[in-house]
Length: 364
Image 1 (cartoon, rainbow, N blue to C red):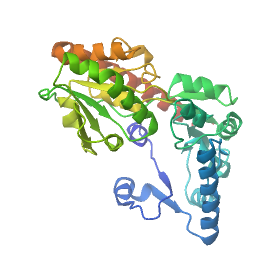
Image 2 (cartoon, one colour):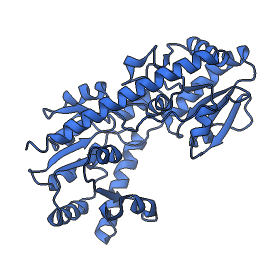
Image 3 (cartoon, rainbow, N blue to C red):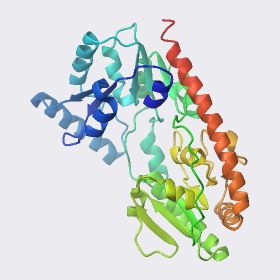
Image 4 (cartoon, rainbow, N blue to C red):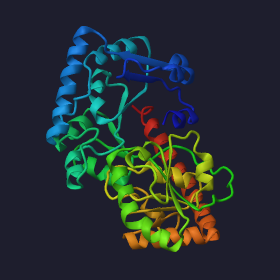
């Protein structure tokens, strides 16, 4: 989002509410320079409060309990924000995630206050439990999520289904602004030999669940038709699966990813559940790569299904679509071209939506 705002001609500052005390902020300072502001809650009282918040979050994850929306909030950060605003004038304040929303109470009324929600967090643990997955990240109640949204003048949703959910919780306006990374097709490299099926992701439960489903139900059918096909696991997701499994290559953390995307015959996202927007799908489309995903993976991108990417409704259909792309490079190339055009239109639409949101600050 910062790059998008800069491209629109705005001066952008970043407030980092630092959690890990040993984390280096050298790269952030190189990018933001004097526009970086870092808050560290290192006072004795801050440490005690931080310990209490961690206990609350641990209890929530252990017992599948929704958490208070302010479970991550350090009240000392509010004083830091007030001091910052006393020195500098800002027209818009954008807070990432509802669990930091309380900081908006320290921002004066003349500043446009925005929450970039990123995802839906109401009853998130229940969603994980229904799919047999351990609790991850953050979950709260509908009432608490609504309380957070009410603190803002406007909320940003990453896709329309999320926006509908938020509108049921608050009377504040909700705008849809999707993923803002610009498309970058690069140059197509020769397809790998053996033919590769690429999955890029972290070790989070949604990814592990989806890749396990693909390995158990889809890959065996694919390899019966294309015996030398390989599934490439890139990112920390590889740690979830044992080495030496036939037809699977674990790459680990790779940066940059360009060469692997270019060499893969097809990119997949086999996730079976989730909320928000699957950024890995947007990344594949933005690179002009042929993509096969599920209805869950296609959330927020539904108007591209069947043209910009292929959507499967079952393990058999998923395998069939992957095999077709492995066998027919021409079809994959054509699908990739449509994917890139879709990504360009998607990016333009979201950039225009963001520009409109920020422009409302001028009319205040």
